[in-house]
Image 1 (cartoon, one colour):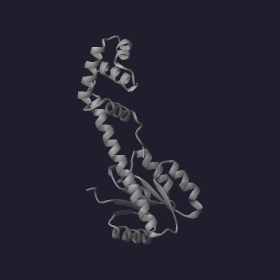
Image 2 (cartoon, rainbow, N blue to C red; image 1 turned 30 degrees about the vertical axis):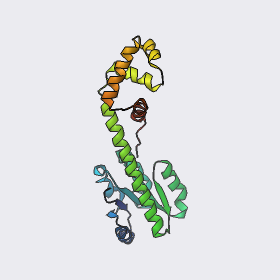
Image 3 (cartoon, one colour; image 1 turned 60 degrees about the vertical axis):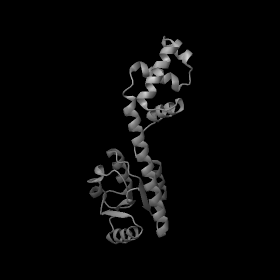
Image 4 (cartoon, one colour; image 1 turned 90 degrees about the vertical axis):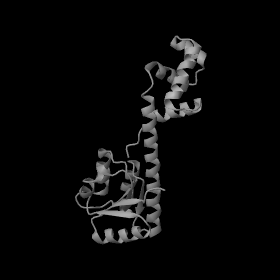
Length: 207
């Protein structure tokens, strides 16, 4: 079963923090509240799961600056902004910079809960993808330089005879390298091997 969802709530208004904490707790979501961006940043690097819920307007460090600092720190938690109508253009910029969503005040309780649940699930998917990429990259480290050359040609879709001609080896040697590549990576088929190679080459998200 998945871990109990957790929300890191940042808002300088104590009444807002308390009311939202009650709402989220009633929905089965654990809440850890912070009165400012700097207070949250002090613990953020150690967090690996959950969702950040922050007001866009706060004294000292607003939600946009908080988002920027999190990106610099490499904290990949999904972030949901709470914003007033006048701040929608700013919130849209936050989306383009990687925020998961924004909700416009005043909002219905269910609107907030839906946004949080979607962000948490998005974060889980991203975490699983990062773990998959890391595992594949670790397997790829076992390949020799020659095997990597063969793998590159296989991913290009070239047949064994063409690979053999381009790399100056016999088709049989290509088959041997291919078998070793399959063994080291754990791929059960050529299509799986190609998918693994492409996954390892995919860019990491910096959210």
